[in-house]
Image (cartoon, rainbow, N blue to C red; front, side, top):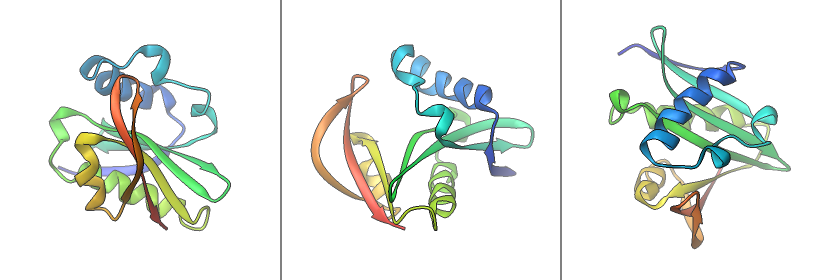
Length: 138
């Protein structure tokens, strides 16, 4: 596996990856997947050679880098790519914010804790999936 992760303006490819993972696999409504923040976010695209395999976005607001829409195709899960996407998002955010924040699906809390995030606040519904907010300093 020769995966690269880069900032991208190719939103169509990022949206396609998100469609596969969030809409097709997880049943997130189309109306909730793409939102008004997409045009103002930084987007990361992970590619295995020429094949897109993962994405994430970063919304910079005040002193917070909100990492979201993190997804990896089934073929590349459990390879370390998810952690690499998060670590790249953290690196990109350094100097632009002091805190990274994300809304984690409950099943992913342990994954994010291993990357230095701490859960806080109540469980809440986001697109029909239970989430909890998490933060970590940059």
